[in-house]
Image (cartoon, rainbow, N blue to C red; front, side, top):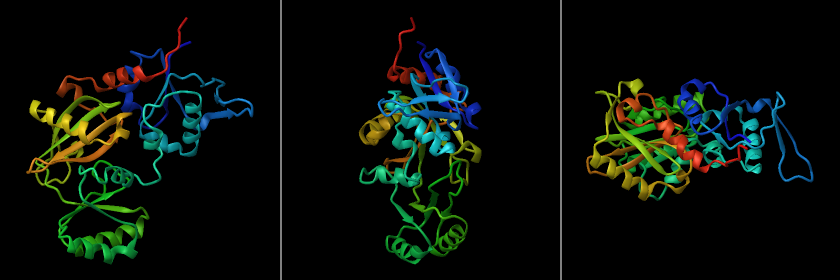
Length: 307
């Protein structure tokens, strides 16, 4: 029986081709699955459902399922598919809890960091009804300037800096006219250094320093940010910070972790990204992140005798 890796079909498949091709260095095959083309037979006397693709291929017996952000695209069909795979004994690359969060996005991550002393002090507003109260609280806390952080977003979308209560008030009023999601505000931290760290199943793979363009709020490459090798002393400090403070749920899965340091040498866990992009990382660091990730994941995959 072959050792087969499954992955969910998505619009980002081409962007993740490194993972797809490097997986073939360890698994016998990779199958790309659309959960909406899968059906199930639940026998009342059996512990495990039969999982069948629309072409008649039985999907029971996968060695592992590799996930990225796109399984959310299929919602219910993805959820029952992944839960059925777990009943079949198929390990997932990432915990199910990190995939189907209770519609909180970055709010879920905020709750996970609470009390650990590693995040940025934040405020959450749920609707216009609490606008006056939250602004009074921010003023009382001397929180300005403050930065908006939508619970769903990426590539700096929706991230703005506000220096005054009036500017914040106008933004929130416009936001809730168009969007019903809760909104996070963080105290502005002027990071003197920022890094992206790649980890799989708790293993530090590599990192690089991220520098923002002059006058920009974000370090993303799309915003003119640049990538630089991590200095050895900084990498040791990052490893210590992660091993000491990273929430234990991130010891399983494939992550790109964004970390910042202020002018007092305090470290902050900015964001945890699942199956983060690896553009230019090999050229900069000499480390093939997808290959190293797949090597680690294969150790956790269930193995079948090929004879």
